[in-house]
Length: 566
Image (tube, rainbow, N blue to C red; front, top):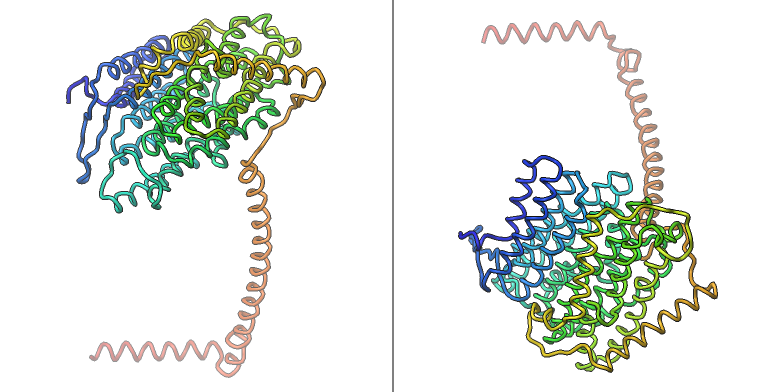
């Protein structure tokens, strides 16, 4: 196998071994920056085609399928790994460093997988490696959160494996290409993708895990799992209409939870649900423009959501809290972090000249062009909502809302540099969309900066901003309370444990009652046996124990004599 056709994922896996041989310190940190650059160069220079085919138990595995769709995701994953490692330059934790490498490698391997078996191995690889970024926080809460995350993510892989087995039985093929819903196999695969895409009612692992990870681990987590799932949906279920309506619901329900949430990292997690909904709608529409919109928004989302997580992470790093009720006034001592946060907020809100505008507009235009006008209206409303809870709430409560009295130092230089790179790319993409569109899987002649679109978007954003101001000034806006908000995860974090506890107590009482009953019965039975066969029982009265011993000795002697003579 030629070096330039060596699976990119294996570069990351091998690098994890090399990392362990390097001394803890700057040498490791520099190595972590060099690797994604090398991997991105390999991805960029590889011609389209299938490489690194391997035989396994009679199946041909396609480890490297390179086309415009997989290359786009692989490139942004390499860039996300670089920015995440730069942000984590100060980390000297081997667990986090190795987990970040393996996690990124597994995600890249998944987008290059040409068959469902290879996809399954990498799919589970992302679950097993990512959980260490949660456990690396080394708290009791992080341990339990990590266990919930692992169960859900590994469960997704098990469902994917079951679907793969049934798909092979039905079709005789393991190729990972476009599928049509209609069989149990494709529905299982669809469900597995939906879990990692955080479909409604399957989404709670995202809000649970992201805020529980380490400061740098959260930045890494937000980059890979959900975007890998978006890639899988785009590859396997493009044009599946049900995705349009699933995505529309995804854009709506997180808005209300994000508005009342106090933990700013959980706000961003809910915002991730919202933005994933736009991508799912684009995949469901399935036209070239819509798929380009889904892919471009996934790329843009990794950058601007990473930027927001990095800015809130820097605040958490310096102040020890990410609670909106405990922050405010930080613009005085963290002006650069505040500036980068505002760039991320403008990007996620789809302000003109920022990345979200040129990516989200493709999806909105595709939905209107294909006649999904209600869905288009929902997406428009959701765009106003995301500006409300992420575009305004995050920077406002972190840096401006009130003077918390905190006067932390500015974020470390390497964190500022990582945020600066992400902010620069958000602006460059927004200013030069045509160049950005060349990375997308399909050739579409689309101009986002039309008068109608720009004016419509600005009106939407300004009225949303006005609504926020009125709600805050009138006191109607939900206050930032020190609380933990649960949505449907209440079912398995509160309801099911309560039910299990009640059932356990009832079963314990039943078991104790039954044990007491059988113990009484057994004691009575033994007593009755003793009355009959005991030393002073009825049988012993007619045949004393001494007499019985004598007769046993007699029979034993007779037996020995007979045995000897025979």
